[in-house]
Image (cartoon, rainbow, N blue to C red; front, side):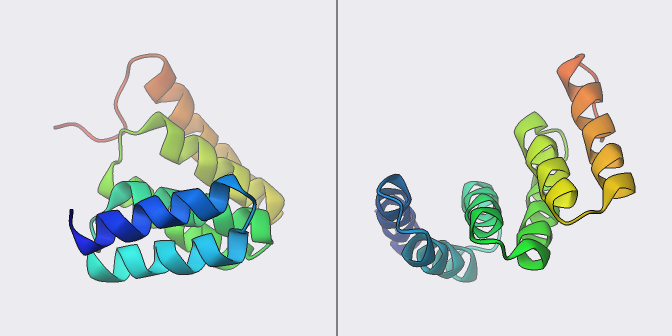
Length: 110
């Protein structure tokens, strides 16, 4: 098992029992070790959103959508982050991308 996988599993354990600060730190370590680790970026963004660290959460959400531009969950999460931060236009744009994907379309063509 790779070091980032170990940290990711440990972070998920902390998240499961509500230890958000500990989970966020481990997810940060994951993305530092493996910058293209989509699942860790997504999980870090969601955890930071729950912690109220919205600007950093949005940055993570943007990184996740950059890594997987056709991921419905990533766009939905980013929309939620923008809503919590009061960025309604951005939230609507992200929601629009999620809607395209939910209907079988693509945000970025292969």
